Image (cartoon, rainbow, N blue to C red):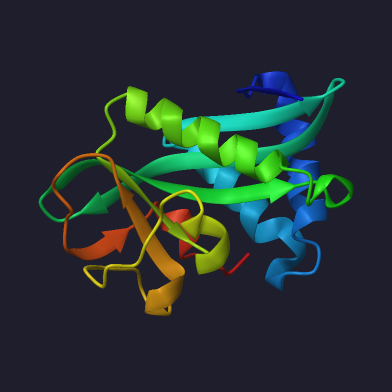
Length: 166
């Protein structure tokens, strides 16, 4: 498995992977596809890593900027997807670890994620009750601070994350 930054040639495979990985979710993967497309179109896709297994895209992890009052250089993780046949083999973990290391190296102050506490906790994400996102249950909205200062307040993602009309 090779973790690398996406190329333009990967876009169709990433769309297909998102559709497969989120086939059982609301929107059947179309919401996640739309989010990634909108981030690319608006220049807000900060980092998109893929797991390449023998030339096949087996997973993807996306990082984009988020806004938090008084805080700079914070990112959101998501969507993260792994092909159904490759789940449970460490593909997602490898993508997340590589992505967190990359954004930290670029000077990120921290990262937020909306997801399973048990899963994301293994990467250091925690809910401290200080950051909020829309109507998300607090225990599922978690942050990872790379420095000493942990911000407080409402987190705002790219508008595509809240537009579920498509």
